[in-house]
Amino acid sequence: MKNLGQMMKQAQQMQAKMAEMQAQLEQVEMSGAAGGGLVKVTIGGKGELKKIAIDKSLVDPNEVEVLEDLIVAAFNDAKGRLETHLQEEMAKLTGGLKLPGGLKLPF
Image (cartoon, rainbow, N blue to C red; front, side, top):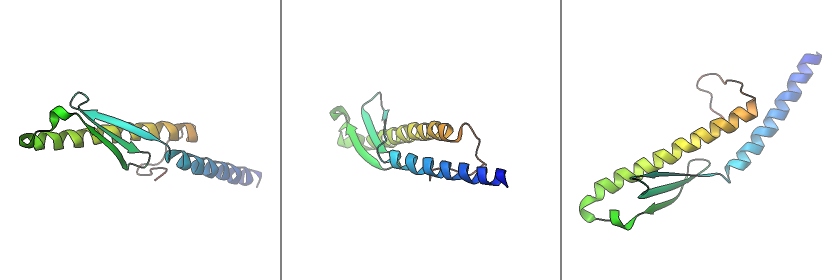
């Protein structure tokens, strides 16, 4: 029974750490860029778009498709950086414990 009590205590500690990590995610921002930095996108810790910066040299009505592609690429760059950051933070939290396939935390 002592082992069960210890496991419950560890589960509660991990739950508290998860809640803390989720609160910290509210403050995280990651930026991504495309086109050699001509398009920059900033997203929040939960993947929400916060800001887009576009170099004026890209604003050409005849080249809208290029601009659209660069915005998507910059967003995907930022999203990839955010996912890497989340994986690193989760590894710290779980002590390197591998989660079962398909299980994503904290979402």
